[in-house]
Image 1: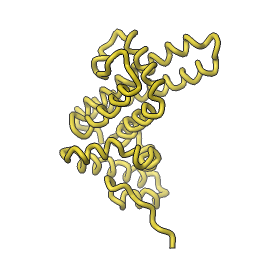
Image 2 (image 1 turned 120 degrees about the vertical axis):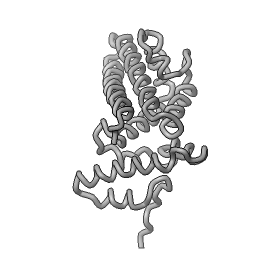
Image 3 (image 1 turned 180 degrees about the vertical axis):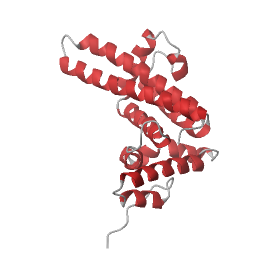
Image 4 (image 1 turned 30 degrees about the vertical axis):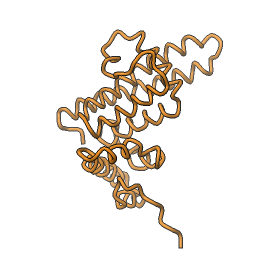
Length: 208
């Protein structure tokens, strides 16, 4: 008999089971919303160890475990917003040196309040930008959710701006790299806009 796969303890087993058995998109969306609400309920106000497990969930279980639950959700929903913050953290952990460079470039040329909102030092090392990602995600469980979304959005905008600058710098001799930088910057910019909307919706009490 095949052994049933282990389910992460931060999520109830029925959440994954319901998702796996659901062909109906409406059911999958409902499960995404329910799991996001229940995760917040379990972790917010919990002890430091539980919050740390939530922050490092993707490290221990893989980002695909969260994609399975939340990537189907609309961007302007609670599961959609949580998915984007975890996705940003996963990107930073996987490309720490690169993300530190584009973030620092964006900070140095920014004329907005985003560097203050994001809250990372300049110069920025890979370790510091990874710590920033952890702090943002920890803020979801230990602080104000809207503030955490705003910090993530500010990071995205700064990294996107820095990525565009770096694309311009290499375009003349490495068109392929310039295209990749531009594509990533575009995606980060979109996520930044989406998370800003989510922060506003949370403050208004209608992010579900």
